[in-house]
Image (cartoon, rainbow, N blue to C red):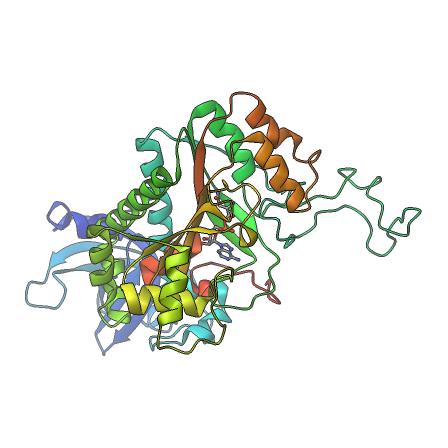
Length: 463
Ligand code: 4AD
């Protein structure tokens, strides 16, 4: 069967006008009067539907077709005709219509607008709704744009392990991976679980970040990035935390924090521009859903400089703020969502880098600044989402790194391979992690991380 995609017809209508084409898709809406029926058909190649016109006199199974429910799949052969006076510029006059798959009458997606809460209860159907179809296409295009950006700039795509023995962020929020029998756990002499008989012979977990392994690759290739799934057993039931999410982690050798921020900003602007250019239908649809603010916001961001302030300056601004925060602010505290939102949404009204955080609230691998109180870290905050990027210049000085490992209660022996990177040709280097779902939320205007993942895994929910 020679099949033509609906997108191809919309992209080049004049080439197909008057021609016979076969399209395959799903019924979005159907209406009929006595002799004439109209079906809006969508085949997933674009957001827009193709109008199919079916005449009862020409089509023997006319009655059967219009007994079908929304969601049924059809194969339609017909002739493309111009309809200059109608809402759509052309339509397909059907010659044959074959029902490929029925849709039962209790199909949950009907023409009316469904709430996101309801749609979350049917994740297996969500991609068929206009909103989620748009979100997931933007997700795909944004992923491609990220690969394109890094490849055009000479970065090596590195696949870091999913199963690992280390806890990069040191927060202990890991999912354990084991082949031990939970109903009969082997214990050591001290009464603790013994991993000797476990698959790996030692504790293992799902990775929280590919950064440490990424650093190994950066010390060979100079510029690398990872793009893969990461897992965190954070029990935070918020609209921005998922237990399984995707992260992009570039790592650059011979680079400092300024180089790192420049890379993050260039990448972000590149992806925004690429999505605006390649997802016009979807972005228009989502813009309408977001009260026409989305496109203006993204265009503004892609054309303006990102502000940079230090953590110390951020604290001073928060302390001066007339707003009463639930979490009190003082130097040394971790910034909470309400603080981040105040800074980006109310004070700066645009994305903002905050740099040089106190070492106590950041990870062991971040480079200690000269003040010996702060580290060369950066977080990129965006209005509506908060932190979408976390990164730093890495500690390249072996003695200081070992001291930091100890201070953080980590074993030097476990990180021998990591400290080896400083023993053998270490360089100044930096990198960051971009939370892909948070980026997709920012690009699409979706407010809940559950709505940018096909089957979201969050605390208490894994369908
Ligand atoms: O700030 P984080 O924890 O940084 C790291 O993991 C570093 N190893 C990155 C690096 O320097 N290579 O996480 C990075 C980003 C955050 O800014 C956020 O966007 C996202 O990952 N993130 C999450 N996204 C969804 N759900 C969660 N539970 C997330 N935790 C972090």
